[in-house]
Length: 283
Image (tube, rainbow, N blue to C red; front, side, top):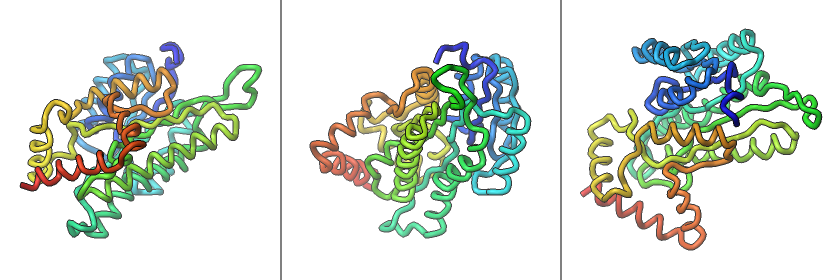
């Protein structure tokens, strides 16, 4: 996409005030977008709104929205749709992490919480946004077709699985499958909605804020530079690049794409590495 394409387009993001969400907003704001920030109410919202306006966003509005509240989601998108008519970019970003699995006595309630936010929330958001998603394209070969972007935040955990994080890995794998299916559906309908999946390595976010996860990540990073946590800005840069280039799927960092290649030759190689990391973190 050329930079002038974004001017006055409507950008909607869930989990807007989180580390990754806010970093992404800062990358897109200078393009002159009309930005709608959706998240739970928290002290970060007002400073972020002002910062995005200062960076060049044409409009910045916040709507309090819980991605597990179906009525609240429907009402939020109805308001945005009535005001804007179209949503050009929908960034399905809200999510949580968890060290919940079967063998570490993870509860069903914790499992359901992870799935409700990370997976069910994306489904509900998409359902509510669908009537407004995409703007009619004015071109001879695309009469009555809509163009826009649908971006998903997933994780490398959705590709590999992670010991003691089954619920989280399941939710992120489901996101990848959802995006892949929608991409095919839009292609089948000959619509110009581009579906983009962000598959990221572990990053410095609010997920690692308990004594257990802080200790885990400290041991993880001790394994060398290949295991250094990403900054939220690293992911934001790649999201921006993916949008500009209409990429289908991107890895952060780029070399994590090797996971797919290594899987072709040996699932055991990746699996044994993840097991070794987890055992080291336990010791």
